[in-house]
Image (tube, rainbow, N blue to C red; front, side, top):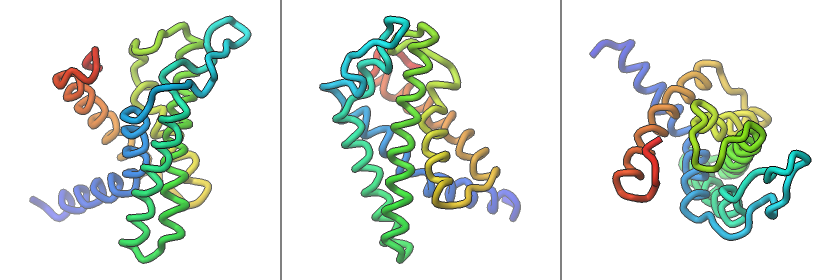
Length: 172
């Protein structure tokens, strides 16, 4: 393996480590979700639900807490707990906000919950996470590009695994 390949692998691992609070928040929001939707079952002007039943207060709160805790742990490791807390919160909350925006867009496009919206389904949460995190830290285009590629791959793999474990009804 060449030095360039090793450097690229290290860069990819650093991006995964950086974005980990967003990944954990997104997974935790799904795992701990349920109950009351964030939009309180309200409809938009077009009579369709604003966001949908998939984005819940419980998922938003527990997902944000979970991702923030990962950020705090990263802060402890790096020796800067406050920065870890802030960045963890921004990545976690941003991921869940991005997911909610993605659901809002899907409802406007008449795409029902659980139906695929390629690219939007995979990248809404990462876009939200990176946008909010960029308010606190400078994020390079390389980091953004690698985060997008890794997220697309991980999203597909995790959905396939969840489908095989009967956690999801569809593989995508």
